[in-house]
Length: 480
Ligand code: MEZ
Picture (cartoon, rainbow, N blue to C red):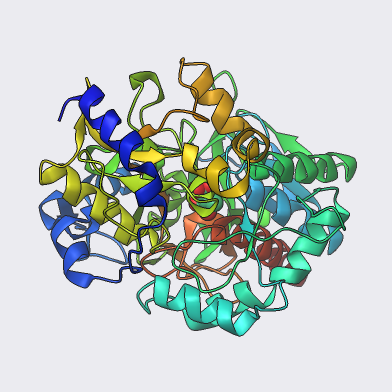
């Protein structure tokens, strides 16, 4: 349908749609018919390695084969107890904890320290901190959200360590949003039965990475920027370091380490299934291929998360994240004829499938480059009071305003965007991969979220498992 005509329906139906009661969906056949994870024609069989015979999204299967030739060095350029590869939230948390546990630490990252998906994470971090909530309820929500496929031991650790992780971040200086009387504000999470999303407006990840970075630097941890890891070194079936390209890409650099932590993030930049991405640039599954090529096993790696609300228009914003917090504050998803077609707070994969269904069934709005459905953000101020959009979603407001769209008065067009890898490297409760002395934390690791991660669980994951990986890597390095 034509953009203008459709927009009129959205405005006309706004008050009716605000009170439309739509049940939270949990529909397996909707997923099977419309979710990209179920489109097996875009998958490819792995023909080598520990998961040989498994089917993965084609782009990821190809990326795992990337195994550039590394030089062999007699002497290392650097030697350390713990080498952390990755400069986002999980890497920084691991570095802080490894150092606290007495290890000499080097953190090497292919960009500048902090340039990562953590820095652009918007909505917030989940934790069971309200009186109505508990780690057990949190576990049940996340386990069913992940289709009962999560490793229960790992998920329990995540849910149990929520409160402690929030306090740790607060001690590092993260100032989560509070009510006037000083209580932490918790917002709703899609697919969850309790409110548990803590935020710093809609730039939560930025505040977290700033705090982590300050701590790493004040702890005098060595940080090597613009170092791209190209290979892990394996001796007697143990990882003993990694080879990097130097910042000028002219030479290779060998860092010898008693233990290595991979914290390299996921696969957003691979644009799997032809989707745009909400990720920052350069998120190319590096840690997965480094580890897979020394024998590590993957778990749920076929399962990717397509965030329901990537920007679909203006074209310049294609794929950029429109935070779920907008829906959690009350914005609803509306199709081309002005109908509210899904409960916006259903689980992420369900909402994604519902949007794709609307668009494939001709109930989407055509844009120059594609199609989308409406997210009626002006509903937020009607529900929460004037000024809420600007005060609670300032980054989103500015992102659209810069392109000439005022989201306080205009709905926006959205379509799913590649956001997250639900699975990754198989780890145990110590973040140990299936290869000795190789640890993994954050998005590169798998098992915690099963086949669909709930909102806010990734920022908690990077803190909880980043710290566990750092601590255990430090301990192992002392035993060698
Ligand atoms: O956990 C996430 O992926 C998240 C909070 C994203 C968002 O919509 O802001």
